[in-house]
Length: 389
Ligand SMILES: Nc1ncnc2c1ncn2[C@@H]1O[C@H](COP(=O)(O)OP(=O)(O)OP(=O)(O)O)[C@@H](O)[C@H]1O
Ligand SMILES: C[C@@](O)(CCOP(=O)(O)OP(=O)(O)O)CC(=O)O
Image 1 (cartoon, helix red, strand yellow):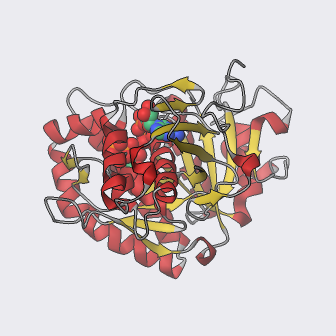
Image 2: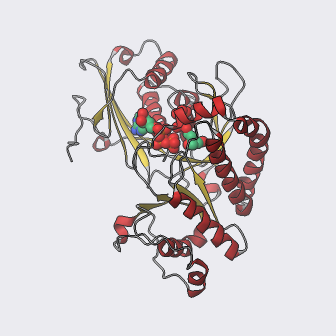
Image 3: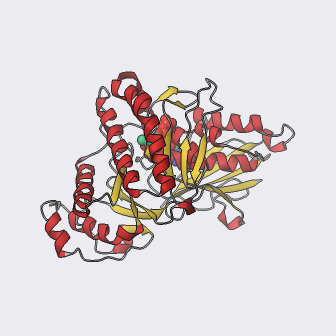
């Protein structure tokens, strides 16, 4: 019995930061995100359940992981408790093989795509129906939002047992087809401290976090929902940038502080504000997760122009565009003379501050792949490909 799922990354425009229950992964505020298309960034997970497997195995990007990971076991236990008790696979071992086609643990939401994919595949394997977002939440909080496509709210809930802490779709991907996302990868290495540790420390030490969660976020969630439903980019962009900035202010208010953004991140912020000022309106917005990489939300009409600005301000080391930009192709236009004069003092005097760019859009939720060619495992539960490279 073998299933393969793919699942998307999501990037929050109103951030989740802080838990009220560490084990159940219950947040202290609602959050809201865009689910990104699996065409550019995704996790793929194959699970084999078999009576002949001698032990449980979990491979992530070709590396053996411990099966004794409490988050993995919590997801499995929740799935098994919802399954029909007569299913034979409930008594079999599992071989799990997962791959992210983007950097893992670098602040690009790999845990969100990873656990959404795992839970989606497990649900197919154990024939679970209905909402599985609360199960994905037990793997990683942000994973519950990747269970749906489009624009998604994670409602914090109030029950101490967490059954109402679930994700809810606000609008499908097709609602705002002009929306684009540019991920500017500044550093694709594993970050110093995970979101889990960082937010734990913020809950313990930051007074600003408490104020944010109770006074600011509830109003912002409503304003953001309205901006998305009305396709009001100006408001959307402003709230997104304000929330990202406030989240990083909380990180700095944490003791000792969690410093996730670096000089290049701040140069990106500066570039976006300079561009928006030149345009006399917010045409581009940024959101930074727990790392230095930027996620720019923008409309398709400005992608080519902002790309010309990015190339001018952050000179790439390669002229080979295929290595530098993945996802939806972008026309490489020379920067206009007018923009050149606006940005001439912002140009970074070093090459390669941006490692590469991913151009994508809002997309659908996880799906099951049905062709046997899509499976990452063979029938013995071993990976089909060699991971030596
Ligand atoms: N495909 C996957 N399947 C299962 N677990 C995964 C997968 N990818 C990542 N993870 C888990 O998520 C962890 C990384 O989570 P972490 O929150 O540190 O980084 P991130 O999700 O990339 O960043 P952020 O959540 O801040 O955007 C990994 O160490 C691993 O335990
Ligand atoms: C900054 C964030 O990306 C934090 C994500 O945190 P995680 O969901 O990775 O944390 P855990 O629940 O401990 O696994 C903001 C967000 O996605 O809302």
